[in-house]
Each structure stands twice: as C-alpha cells, then as structure tokens.
Image 1: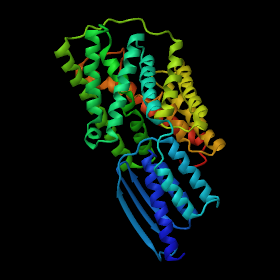
Image 2 (image 1 turned 135 degrees about the horizontal axis):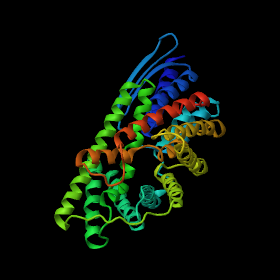
Image 3 (image 1 turned 135 degrees about the vertical axis):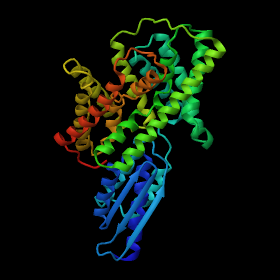
Image 4 (image 1 turned 120 degrees about the vertical axis):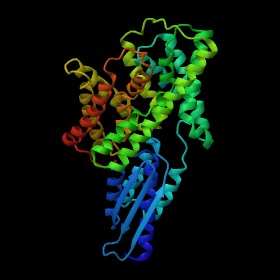
Length: 408
C-alpha cells in the first residue's frame, strides 16, 4: 500500500465515522462497523466513540504508515434516512460497485441532504406524536387535543434551535417552561380542570431522553464504559432541565392565573390505545426521517414490541413484560437486517419508543420532588429501573437467538 492510497483510505474512514456518529449510531455499533470497513480496505484500525468525541487510530499492515485523529463532535440525532443511505453506500463500496473516490464524493452529497419530509410534515408529526402519547397516558379527549397543540409549540422551539446556538443551549428548559405557562393559561381561560402536568409531559415527550438512557445502558452492557456513562449523564441532565422548566412554568402560571383544580374526565376507550400506538409510530416516521420503503417495517416493529409486552404482562409480574417485548423486537429487527440488508436500528428505534420508560422517569422525578403523582403510579422508581434492565436484557437475548447480520 503506497502513501497516497493510505491517505485516501483513512480520510474516507474518518468521514464515514463522523457521519454515522452524527446520525445517532451507538458507540458499540459504530466501532464494530468501522472495523469491518477498515478490514475490507486493507488497514488496521482502533476506534473510540463517545457522545461528544471520536478517536481514530489507523495503520497499515507493517506499520509503514500510521495516523491518529481525534475530533470533538456534538451528540448525534437520529436520522434513519441518511443512516440508511450511508449504509447502502458502504455496501456498494465493499461489493466493488463504487471506487473509493466515488464513495467519498457520495458521502459529501449525503451529508447535505435535507429531511425528505420537510418542515410542515415534521410539524404535523410533532402534533400527532404528542397527541398520541397523551392518549397512551389515559388523557381525556380535550387533553389530547391541547397536548397536540402544545406539541406544535415545542416544534417551533426545536426548529428555532436549529438556527440559533443560544436557543439550542436552552431548548429543553424553555420548551417545557412555555408549555407549562400555556397549559395554565388554557386551564384558566378555556378548559378548567385539565391535568396540566400530564399535558406538559405529553407536549415535550419528543425531548424526553428515554431512548438516550436505553442506549447508554446498552453501551454499558457492551463494555463501552466511557460512552455509556457519558450518554446516561447527558440524558439525566436533559431530564433535569425539562423538569425544572416545567416546574417553573407551572409555578409562574399558577401565580398569574391561579391554581388549577384537576377534575378527572372519562378516558378514551381501550381500543384508542392501539390507535395511539399507530399514530405515535406513524408520526415518528417524519421525526426519525425514516425512508418510505422502510415505513411498513417500522410500523410493524412498534406493534410487535407493544403487543408482545402487553400480552406477556398478563402472565409476568411487575414490568417483566418489557423483557418479552424487547426480545421480540430484537429478533424482528435482526430478521429485518437479514431480509432488507439494512441497519436494524431503522426499525428497532420505532419499537423501542413504545417500551422505554422515559415518561415514567419524568413522573418519578416529579413524585420525588413534589410528593405528588399526576397519574396513578405506584413503585414508580422500582418499575423504571426494572423496565430499563428488561429492555437491555431482552435485546441481548435477541442477539443470541437471532444474531445480527451487520454491525449497524
């Protein structure tokens, strides 16, 4: 291997690693995938990935050339469209359909692609996802509708944060603060007796870091200790910021409009739960930027995870149904990888979203600080811990029963 060829290879590997990190790939999957690519390109490599940094060490067979690269990066956001396109590009490179020069140029093209759904559809997805979550939490019809409208306000702040570094730094607390303040105003002027904390939680559920906590625990279980610890601490800080903003917003709202007397209303019928699962996961298609050809697979993953968890909960005690749901989801996601030759993450994230206890973590934090429950929840802390452990264990067992075809 000559010098120029080595330089070309290591530039491509570094660019590929940064892009996969940008699209929210967990550390253990990112490192394993880069090892596969490096081995095919004829170099040896070692990688270290954390939510905010990437380290590459690449060397040739006889150490004629060595290269070290360390980069400070921002935590990645889930983008299933660009993740899938990047994976397809790597497959074409490994199969000899593209040269390294062509693959490098194609990576640059992929990195600047916008969301395939646009701002309007993504805003409607925020409305649908927040309304669907309120339905899953047993809200009344008017609470579901108001939660969706507050979700649109949350999308406005998310959109603004893409263009303003200052707004991005305070995104979680300011979003939940505004949601709390508006919910109090709605209660005073339009709909007295609504469940304000539940509406606030529903409106910011997209920002609640349940997936980040699950990914962090999965990284710890795979011995990626630095990345797992950093991701969990980042998720906890996001949760604290969300709760503080909501607490402050509701407190200011009560000072301005008076305290709200919650009057329970009839919840939606049981069949609405399954409708909510469909609406939530359909909305996540635009939020996660899932490709059109993967939409049926993604929707089915949510019903498999939720259905298996619900069915098994009738026979297992205290949250262990989540283990069955995660196991079924893991087997299905790995089967999807074998059939579609695409990353299992594409469908796994849609199924995990109905299993992760991010909302229960928020509720537990509220119970711990205020001593009050805005939904009926006993032993919430113990249940959250058990669900997180069941999720990780279910995915590990699934990888043993149905091994994944590729690292991503």
